[in-house]
Length: 231
Image 1: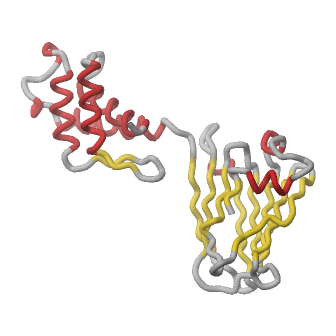
Image 2: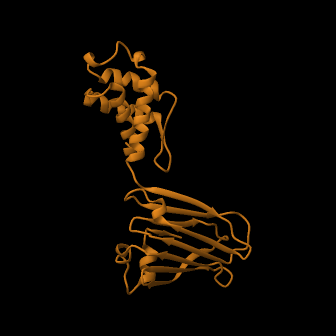
Image 3: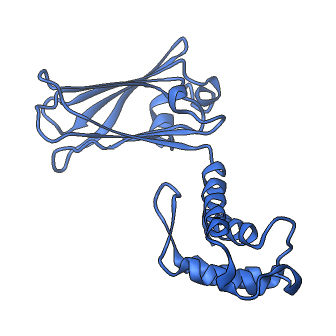
C-alpha cells in the first residue's frame, strides 16, 4: 500500500470516528485495503478520492468503531465531521514529506541560449530535497544552455532530460570542475553540429557532502553515474 494512501485512509477514518476513539485495528487494516483502490495518487504524491470513497469510508469507520462510540448508522456522520476528516487526511499527506518538485519550461532566447538560474533554498521546505525538472518551449535555434543552481545539496536533483534533443542525439558530460564552492559540469551534444548545443551547469555554493561523493580522480565518471543529475 502506498504510504501516502495509507496515511490518508487511516487519518480520515480516525478523524471521522472522533477524538480518543480507538478503532478495531484488524478491521481498520482490512477496510484500508479496500479503500486503497478508491484513491488516486499522482506522481507528486497528491491524493484524490474517487466518488465512492466517502460512502465506503463512512461505512467502514462505523463498523470499526466500538458500539458505544459510534452513531446509530453510517449516515449520521455530520457534514462538518466528514469535511474535518477530509481536511485532516489532506493535511497529513501534505506534511508527511518536505520534498519539493520545481517544474520550469524555458524558451530559447533570440541568441539561441537556454538561460535558467534558481536558488534551491528558495523552494526548500524545512530539510526536504528539491528536484528541478526543466523543459524547453518549442522553437528557437538551440546553441547553448547556461543553468545555475545555488545551494544544491545532497538529495536534490537536477533533471534536464525534458529539454528535447534532435533525433539520435544525446547529451554527454565533457568536463567537470570544482572551483572553490562551485561545481561546474560542461556538456556537449553528440553527435550534434560541432557538439551544439553545449551546456554549462554551475552548482553555486554546492553542498560539500555532495562533492565528497565524487571521485577526484574521475570527476566526469562520478557525475555521469550520479543520480542527482539526469541529462
